[in-house]
Image 1 (tube, rainbow, N blue to C red):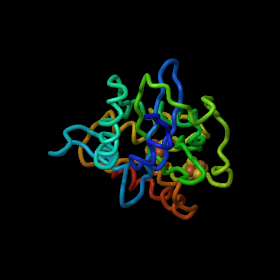
Image 2 (image 1 turned 60 degrees about the vertical axis):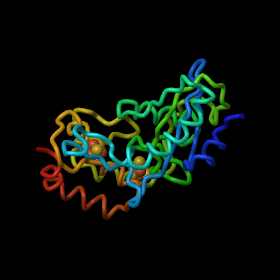
Image 3 (image 1 turned 45 degrees about the vertical axis):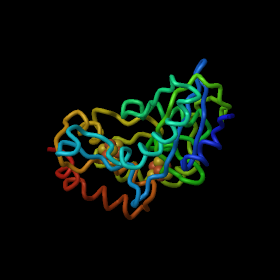
Image 4 (image 1 turned 30 degrees about the horizontal axis):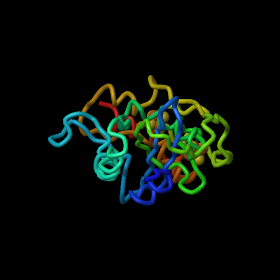
Length: 218
Ligand code: SF4
Ligand code: SF4
């Protein structure tokens, strides 16, 4: 059986699949679109079900598909390793650009033509030789979807979104929540949400700064 990105996408129900070479390894990037019905950004912690912070949306919607794929794929390469934890997330976005899935936007989400900023990523590492989907280069170019926008910058309550740069961990509320691990707070993802909204929404969020800070910080 020949494994290709397109075959994996079709057979296991992912929205996009990309492949990038890392030395002797192939990294298969599995992408699903986040939506209100299938919220991959859902993030909870400190309750009876999830003792520590985690992306519960990933557990609900990504894990069953990834498990189904791995069950079959591991027959071809028993040394396949999933790389899907939070710490790998930034790296996964870079790999996604290398795999030709999209280009990073101002808020660092990978934005593509069809799904804009709504794709989320898991990945597996394998020694099987799978044909890459992109040119393997990290293109750090301005994204044309962002040219007229800036909604993420406007909406961020702490001005942590910098043009096409990784978000300042000291400033960003989401990063501060990760280290703080206080249960049952709303997690900040306004800069991600902004990709699907309009200027009025972004300006309204900017004007609600105090309320947002209260909801998101202990
Ligand atoms: S909100 Fe607008 S400027 Fe920000 S990343 Fe999304 S498309 Fe780009
Ligand atoms: S997660 Fe929130 S605080 Fe962090 S950069 Fe995005 S909008 Fe700003």
